[in-house]
Image (cartoon, rainbow, N blue to C red; front, side):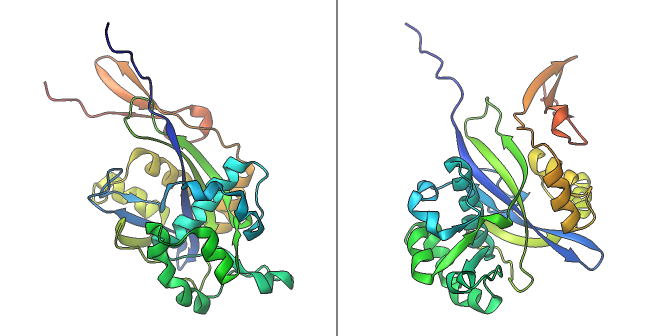
Length: 271
């Protein structure tokens, strides 16, 4: 008997965060360069993010979340987005419990963030649990600051697959974003249009999903406009597929997802 086809690999829940800030001549987004030894998008210019941890689904986190969605899976992805932003680039979208109890919606200050910096690596390695971090430091994750921007699922023919939700968030002005030196080896605040130009010129490696989302982000002039545009848009899940036409292969996505480019011709393989 022949071996049965196991079917597509499961798509692992993941989150990506687009941290925004106003720049001197337009909106900027924070991006990192993936370490060359990372097995997904190595060496590429990407948004911070990663797969969800089992701990992100823990209901015990509920008292430590503002704006928690009722859907447990969505809540876990948003928790993952905030956790990844802190671990990977040192920006923490969270509030002090004491200040919040008095009605403040302010995020943790830059001065407090400096005192929390030493948690980044232990959280990333699993040496410290997210729940313990929030409980011990009396913090509440500000999931209400996240705005859903996109939803991409890795094509079924890929051996590793992710079910990734992209979120926009305003970066607090006094938080210093900096790559972690482990998963990412460089970082930059960059205008979306400039990132697109560098990808086209070949001076930066930008994978297909990232490039499409940078292009969409570039349609907005300010962080406020980007957030408003995302809130007004229907988020269509994007599951890319391949099509063969006249001997060439095209990578395609649904036109209704709203991207300026819905297909890309793949490089021809040498015969």
